[in-house]
Image (tube, rainbow, N blue to C red):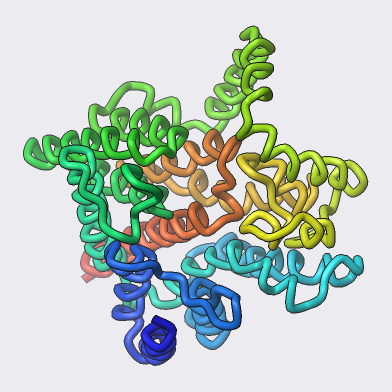
Length: 407
């Protein structure tokens, strides 16, 4: 398996510079754990390098080709370079503070660096346009829905998706969620809408067994709103309405007598085990609440082995995780960087669907770190590229129409 993994990474190194379209296809195959046939972890000297290798390939490709960045608006430059600044801040901050060596800090950055899928795609917008990505996303989405459907009906599980006997799990349901939002946004005819409804049904049943409840619910509600063109769509066209809605939601949550349920939750074994990690990190945040600690703190190295101890991360606490890494100031700026682009361009059905897609992450991030981990960052990067591809496509169409009108 090590030899296969190294050969695959060598192939990706060649494809990224010479065949970007094929690199994207094989990257999706990699994310799918090679279509579920075997684990996609490529471990060298005890360190998983496959994910980080892909992310660095995409970053270096962008730095090599950044002059090809499309001239859409000033914010696009702020977005792409702002994300890179956040990445290097997360690496350098713990080194400067004396909390980590450079190697440990780089290792801790691998999850966040998956956002560079957006950088790779945006400088390849002439080679990898929205239509091509949509086709790749459709194959990926339909395949994973089929996998969920087989498990739901017959209990069949591909080896790489076997969590434990009788349980299924794959790492990127957020990408599958994006596929649903994109497909349903463009399902204008009756056949497409029926297919979309069937996909939503497969998603709901399959994800119920898969276990990611938060994104199951938000995607279900959001996709049904898009599919049936519920009047609430007009609510999402206005940023002020969205802000008012979030305030009302927060007030509603505080008005519900949640103390009893929180007490019951805090007494569960799973919650107590996770709190061993989270409580120590919360105490550290209180010491540096404004600027955070970057991707790692020396306390993580004292908590034993495991995926949650190789970086300064929180279990099921997305916003606290971000505050720990970037501080309150950095968290606000980072969220604005990712969310603002979806609200600065005129709506069409696709952009509106992407808007609801990213808004669901604001809710999901309460319990699931979708803004700092690969499971969410890849989908966010893809959504950002689809958004800007749509804007580029629209402006090129308007430009061509203007030229024809003059002639």
